[in-house]
Length: 240
Image (cartoon, rainbow, N blue to C red):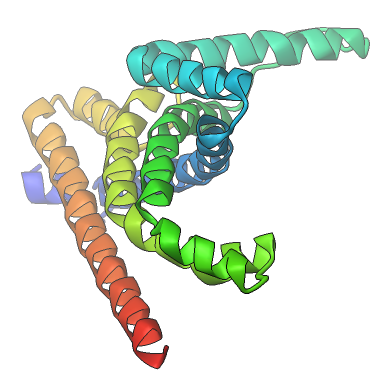
C-alpha cells in the first residue's frame, strides 16, 4: 500500500481519522483558552489589586503554573481529578472507579497553564492604558462600569491580542501532551497510526505538517484580528 493510500480517505486510509484528531486538538486548545481567560482575568485583577494578600496569591499562581512542567500539571489534574471524582462517588454510595474524562482533564490542565500566561498579558494590557484617559473619565462623572466598557475593555483587547496569539500557540503545542490521558488528539492519533502501519516517519511527518498548518492559520487569524481592532480603535478616535 502506497503512502498516498495510507494518508488518504479510502477504505484503509487514515485521512479521516487524522482530520478528526486535528479537530479534537483545536477543541482542546479552544476550551483551554476559554478556561485560561477566566482564570487569567481573575489573577490579573488580583495582581493589580491594592490588597497585598491578593497580589501574593496572584504572584504565587503565575509562578507555579509558569514554572512547573506542563506534563506534571496534566498528570496532577488527570489523576488527582479522577481520585477526587471517585471519592465523591463513594460518598454518594457509588462503588467503583470514576475517571475524569480525558478531554475535560486536558482542557483544565492546559487552561491552568494558559491562565498564568494570560494573567500577565491582561496585566500588561491594563497598565498600557493611558491613566490620563481614566482620570478624565472620572472627572466627568463616568461610573466604573461605563469606564470599563468605553475605555478599558476596548484598549485592553487591543493591547492584549498579540500576547493572546502567543498564548494560543503555546496552548496548541501543550495540547500534544494531553495524549498521555488517552485523548485521541492529533499527536496520539499519529502515534497509533504509525504503530499500526509501521510507517513511523510518514505519520509523524504528516502530524507535524498538520500542526504547522494550524499554527500558520492561527498566526493569520490573530494578525487579522489585531489589524481589525486597531482599525476600529483609530476610527473611534477619529469620531471623537
